[in-house]
Image 1 (spheres, rainbow, N blue to C red):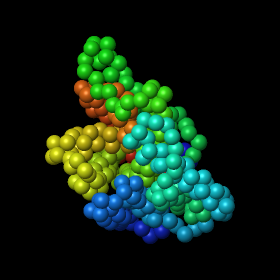
Image 2: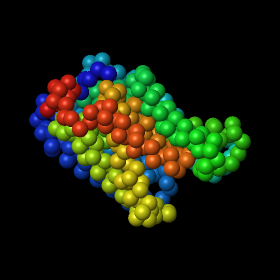
Image 3: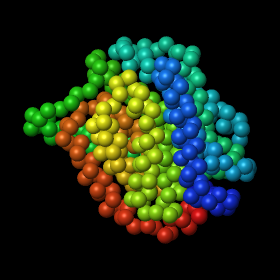
Image 4: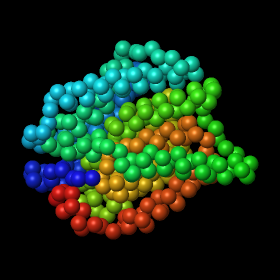
Length: 332
């Protein structure tokens, strides 16, 4: 992918300062919205205002106040309206079908509010601001082979060990809420689209598109991955602590440390191999969040995640600092 992002240093922003500003802004935006909604027992859908914290922080800090002459307000407005309608429909379907196996649609007017933020983020690819446009054009671009790999790799990773376990009559976990096969397939697709738009699109422009970029200008990809994983994991704190069934310490350690470190490593590998495509990491993020809930899997087979992460480290030589990264992507 062609890089058009302007360097922080060209605008008088030290790299370390932009990293710290991003973390502070992402946490403040998210937690100040998460906690009141949870404490007030508000609708779950309103939590997605807070989920947008990483993307909002990245967009704010990417603003350069320099107009792109090729931008069109009409095009951005049209894109925003179309994405708003799509997000509203998907959110309504998700909450309807989560409690029922019947395929029906009844739009919920209140759900148009949390649909605003993913629509706004996606429409940023047509922003008149050169910095915002450069960031989000890496999210909204024609799919390439790495987009396809990011979409399909996690289902393959989950299903191949499951098939082996099934052949040897080992125990499998079969998720699902009943219904016929066509119904389950449609519901799985809706769940994936919902996760893509209301989780991955709201997180990946920040964690990978902004924070990982800047860390890799100073550190190796492997160290940068750990430095992204730490705030990424901690950022989920209010959701982990206040969720209806609060995580036990063991579950929290398994999810946020044992699982998220190899996943963060694979995401860094995909991000770098795809030419810094936020779209690729968003598709993988949505896929990894969806597949365990809709596809059968072998619990021992999930340990292969560490093998995948180890391959990513070796293939990407992630222990080595790439001195050309800073010059190649205009980050100082």
